[in-house]
Length: 236
Image (cartoon, rainbow, N blue to C red; front, side):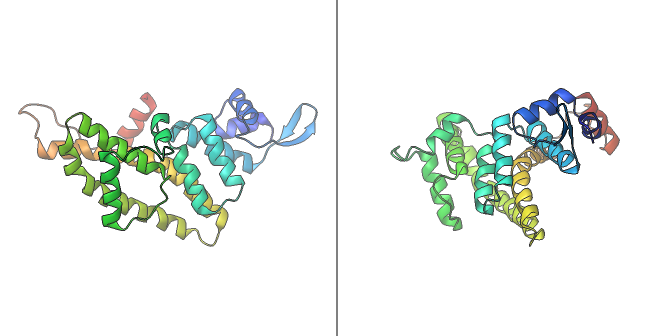
């Protein structure tokens, strides 16, 4: 197919496709003349992947490129996990913290280390989640909100363990297809964060209605339908 057909198939403007090519997010087509190339289903699949990483996963172009490079390099699954985890948006200041081996342990770092010890979680010290979790706990303390830590740390760890088990079960379901397993690791890690964020927001509102009923006379939400969600998506 020509680029115009690739554009129509993926509902992606031609200038955007050319941008993907320049940034090496999309592999080159087969050159058929000085000004023409042919594209195939691998390009359709790649465009959809790139758009998922950028538009749903919220990655920058550079971060998406690192994930795609990991997919193409046929790295071990553990390495792909690492690349994908670091691609997920973590503030630069926190990413720098994880490399500062000389920094004195903070309250948050101590709490995270103790949590990992209690649960038998063994990870490398450069796992970006360690620095991120520690910074959040330190921030709670700085804001005088230590009670949040007490209330959510263990339940949050329970939820994370459950999700991690589901993530790895999904990877295992693709065995022995290494390429499929790698794709699930990379895409699932990035998009999984967005999925969890969405589900958490749904659950928080639903739980708030259960625990704190609306004032008398206040309109309650109507039962959800797929059509209602789709209509809202079109407005966003």
